[in-house]
Amino acid sequence: MAGPDLTGYETIVGVTGGIAAYKTCTVVSRLVQWGAGVTVVMTEASLRFVGAQTFQALTGRQVHTSLWESESQYSPRHLRLGEGQDLMLIAPATANIIAKIAHGLADDLLSTTVVGADCPVVLAPAMNARMWANRVVQHNVQALRDLGFGIIEPGTGWQACRAVGPGRMAEPEQILNQVAERLRSAPPRKQSAGN
Ligand SMILES: Cc1cc2nc3c(=O)[nH]c(=O)nc-3n(C[C@H](O)[C@H](O)[C@H](O)COP(=O)(O)O)c2cc1C
Image (cartoon, rainbow, N blue to C red; front, side, top):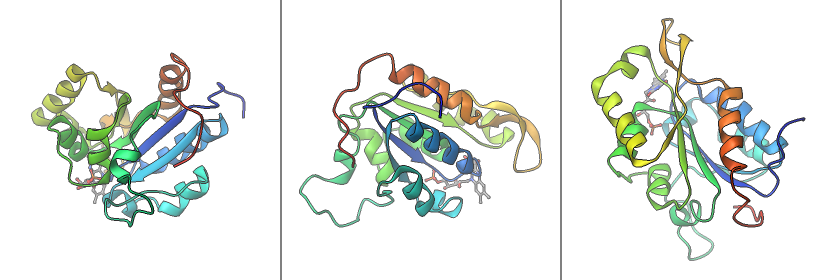
């Protein structure tokens, strides 16, 4: 598919538990078509929205869902996954993962991978308008901005809770534009090896 050439770039896509996870399938598929290596890490809640098999098929790689999967090598997954990547994208980013990252919590594979990552981390928040307006959520989002995390601003529109308001995850095209632009601002860090 026509688009930017992302050959050689390695990315982690974290998926958390929101309806917008279905849109992340398009983001992942397009990144792969543009040549990027994509390894998906899913939270337990996200598995209720999209199956791991879907992302496995789209990426051609194992999907990681647990800190506690057995390791075939001594290199803990939560450290190995975030090492040497060009970018980590979390989409959708729930209020929960935003709070956890803002406070350095590391109680599952995705949050622990973020704490151990040595690459830029970008989040695409997605939630109901009242949740997005919540002062604690806004405080946490601002804390992440101040710490240098990328925030792909949510839009305003129809939400799965049948309300219209701000908090709807940015559309795949917007997410892809921002991810591609960030990736192409520097050469790939390592040769694609898969995860
Ligand atoms: C049907 C349904 C839809 C949900 N959608 C969202 C959402 O869009 N954004 C959000 O922040 N939380 C949403 N939640 C709540 C999260 O799934 C919940 O806070 C969960 O603990 C998030 O875990 P995670 O961040 O580890 O994926 C939803 C819950 C349900 C049952």
